[in-house]
Length: 166
Image (cartoon, rainbow, N blue to C red; front, side):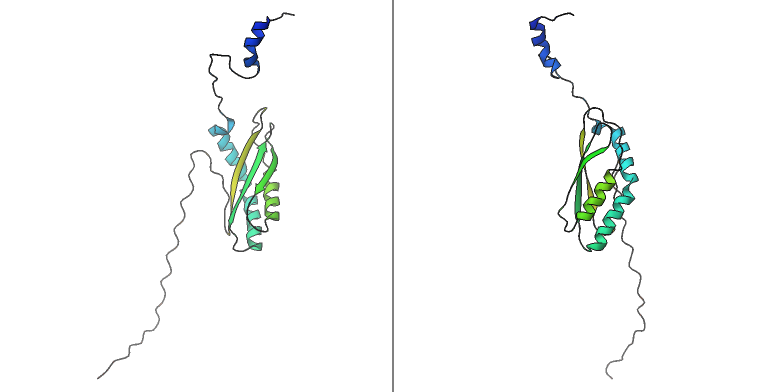
C-alpha cells in the first residue's frame, strides 16, 4: 500500500472535499433542471395527468363556487425519479380535499432519474371555474386567450311610431 506524504494530502484535501485545488476555477455543472430535454420530458409526464388535476380543481370549484386562487406544489424528486414529500400551499378556504387530490396525482409521476442528488421542484396550479392545467415545455408559449364571441344581434322586434302633434 502506497502512502502519500502529508503535504500531498493537505494539498489534495480541498479536491477530496469537492473543492477545486488552489489556483483552479471550478467549472459549474449544468443542473439537470436547466436541460431542455429534462424540461420537455417533465412537461410531457405532468401534462399526461393534467385531466386528473383538472378533475381535482373541478370538484373543488363545484363545492366552493366563486373561489379563485392558486395551489403551489413543492416536492423533492428522489434519485430514482419519483416524487418525494409533496407539500402544497394555498390560501383557498376548504382546500383539504383539493390538496389531497393534487398530492395523489403527483405521486403518479415518474421522471428521468436525476442521479445521486435529489432535486427540489415546484409548480403552480391555477384554481378557478373552467381552469385547465398545463405545464409549458421549453420554447412553448401560452396559448393566446380566445376572443369572446361577438354578441348575437338581437331582434329589435316591432317598433311603434306614434305621430306627434297636428
